[in-house]
Length: 512
Image (cartoon, rainbow, N blue to C red; front, top):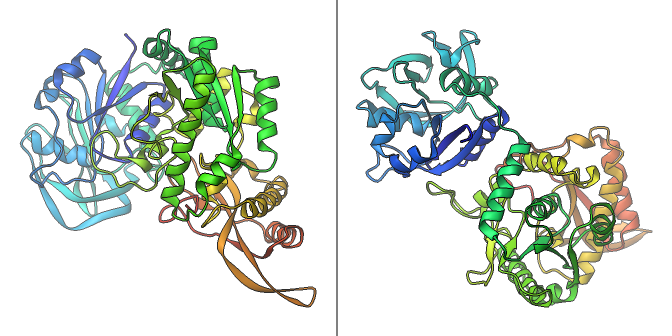
């Protein structure tokens, strides 16, 4: 049986980030519900457990718990934030609500040598995010680190290999966080670090074959990285029993449909079926302004088309799609607890409640950069893997307000100018996304000594590691000037260009 570590999820949006850090260190990781039983865990034979953080308070009556028998399994445990507080409470320590919380950067002092902090200095920069704190240690534990706002910032029971940290080692704001996790995996849990992306492919292929067996699968191919990798992975597992259906919904960027057709018929041939449904989508979206309604209409229309096309190719019981983890956590609560819905994705929250397909989502535990690694391992073209993320609903969520043919035409042309000029940006490889947005307002302008009353286009250029957070790019003024000038001069119907300088959070990357 392969070496693995289990992350018990208590509703944290960072649970997958913890798993990602563990996988980056060469150890296979699986995220499980916090209420999994001891016997179920034993059957999985993990080498160690990590308790995630979470939005709840252990002082609340109905707080999420873990099977008490988990602590008697004899394997190492690392509790993070809420996970540390829960560990303390269940092992007969005390937790109290702080008079004030501790949020953001803190400097933590190592007060007692510990294998968890091996190879580090006396002081560590860490990222805190908590209100409650451990007030009294459980029997057998000792304080190994403190911060100005938290006396028990880290605790340990070396005899049982149980550790707790009040900060978040998984986030980039804790610079030596990966080192701490590595110490836990290798020096505490004795992991060997033999897991690779090639291993993930092997496991996924086996899982897909076991799930699908001899049934047929259609794959929703948008031409983006996520759906392309999904199609390649499912195709490797079941061959021609997978039919990739590319639906031109009329909401794509300039020249995109032709490029996708060329890639998947010439460069990386797939068992592909092409459908032009642009008029169908535009008719369905007529008069719709609310972004959530747009997404759900697009999701339903996709399913209607997939159902219709599946019958044409002989029927299918499964729908494979490139859902990633950020899609999941923004659309519905994650596996262990409450999490607010930020927006519906057409391939998650936008799906109708009743459809005849069973979903196959082999990438839903991965982040975008991991998907690119997977695609490279599968042999997909480099230029496809380097494409910027593009929303499933396409330009429909980059036109604020009603989607019309005129609006799509204006936005395509404006976005094309952005893409062309961004190619000359020296740091283009560091850009996560760069695109234009058509705003639902008009402004007064002067062109050729005449008054104009025309559309406003916003430019959005951001950097990000995984799409969970993002910062706006400080583009040189000369690039912004050229982009603005080209859009205003070359795109009929636009007389003003603005630049979006908001971060995620509080904003999202897309405007809708």
